[in-house]
Image (cartoon, rainbow, N blue to C red; front, top):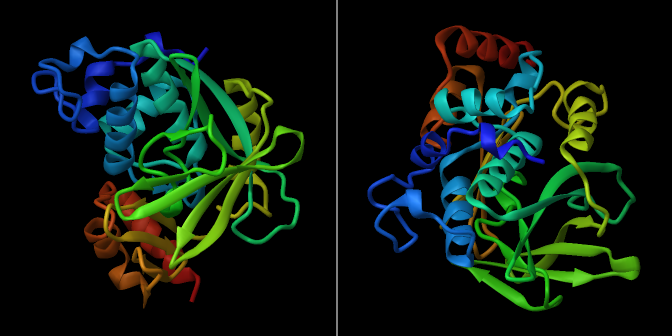
Length: 285
């Protein structure tokens, strides 16, 4: 379903820091011996979210966002770019499927802006390991999980380093991913049991990358869920979020933009793209 057979798995693993010889973080001699077990799922998910930045700069640059595996591989793997949820989770799904996991999609509704009913605009994955479902999401930006989250025990707190998550259940089997910030639980998004397929993400991706009301239109968005500090650049505001809820805020002007996305997010653009990005950022004055 996710075209995992088309993915250069070795190149993907190298991109996220799991070398063929070392099998970094998975306790095996060679990454080529990866098996569809929980140890591998944790290692791949954590490595992916650590290595590949969340960003939607192609939307700002007026370029189409392609979701076929080869386009994702070219952009996120070979060109070392980032991407937003449809790109990140489509690539992750292809890799997990190639390894042998059972992967299905879900559509989620963002709740970070309050309890108002929002459309389904976020893509997540559910991976089944030994009969148990796990939420996998490499594409929710700086507040997203670094590791898989079990779905079989709603309400249980899940520690991921200095950060804590939980999944609670609402009516009709709807699940809510929650994130603890400064001792306060906040809803991130909701998703239902309905399965989504790659073709569904093509449609949602079209809305997110072209519709005037999309949150990604007309502004810089670059984010990363770090272990100790989580960073988000939206428009001209850079925020560093700490586990105790403390936020550091900084205004980023056109002259500082490229240095910030390199230093804070490890993202470098080709010269022509970088110049266009700065021009667009300056035009917002």
